[in-house]
Image 1 (cartoon, helix red, strand yellow):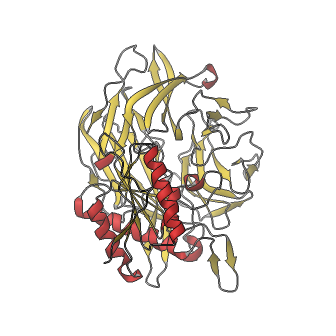
Image 2: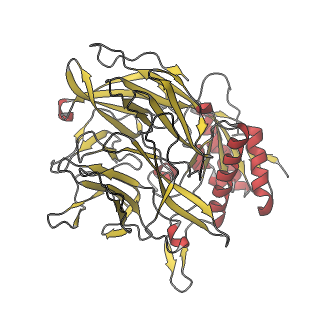
Image 3: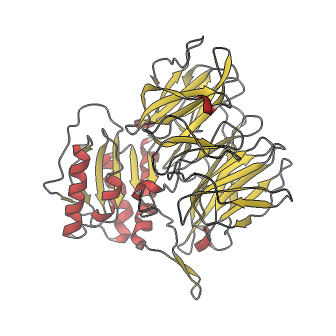
Length: 522
């Protein structure tokens, strides 16, 4: 293997003292691909760039500038880019060796299954506006990070960014494998389980006894999914897990499918991952572009799973309460981006929201009076990418305003969204209803800020219009923070930190409002 550093005046090495979000390895084909991902790193992060090729001189200079800017805002920049210079056949081994040397907490790379921009009817193949090296390098980065995790036993988290998915927000516009704030779950016996998607598959931690003694982290065996996760409670409150799984084919292609598992008892392994296929599973070239799933249960216990299909519209399947599963069906209509949110409604149905692909806006699909799905593309708001999430109120959604970043909530029939008094945070909000404060039920909201620090807010249950008060928590999160309410009414907030650890804080009992214990590292 050949290794040399691409250095320049801008590639400063920041002070390594102090706490931070850990080492982030940005893995890309060439230096020009790294600058947008470097720009995403928050203050305090240590950043190392790994390139398969050296690239052009101007691109190396641009990366040096991006690294210098990152250092100025408080990142610790681990020198200039490390260039492997390996041939394609040697790239995977060279990359694994480089990651062994760096030992990163997180890997940021590109999309192994990019969004197509056209379709060659004669050849039966999709066309893309990014070079093949983007997908190839991303797949190699996923494989190398997974191999490193299996060697060391320490979780490695991976973010895959879709280049140019929205020019207004750059690489931040879309993560191929998102993680919602629902990854913390409370069992029947009061014990909590944390589900963390990693490079090697799903990692789980659970309380050995209610209120203390955490296990793990342990890798859940069997057909590890890609590093994204959606956790949805079923009607009994048990966690249902959804993800995407990539499987290499013998002909050089890759099958991408939606998979589902469930945990029925705290401390016991989840069920094996079950394939739900995808809207275009009959053709792997089309099927690899399936969007990340959204899911919700209706009042009768039927599970609806939604995903963006190859045509950029929405498809769904239904698993009935008796176990029967329908084929995938297409809704058509407005083209959507790669982020959907499904919600359960007060009338016992399921609805799905999607951010529009071709213009600013959100589309809603709901069961019409004739039993057929109906589309409403006239909703009075536009959401910032990556922020749509279910609200506590049935049928409603949380989001950040596209223009102002302000957190808001909207429910069907409302003339407009309600502001939630918070515009400094990033990513989706998580809502936890049923928290008792001063003898009254409240909804607690949880978010992470621009520096990763967590904050909680609260409003009377069902009354976001009454106003939300916020308070910061002395804890930073490595991704969306999560919260869970036990059956005894104990509210716990958790944040993932480098090395696979968790920061956990519990709301103090009594009429103390949102007063939490000091975060404990487990």
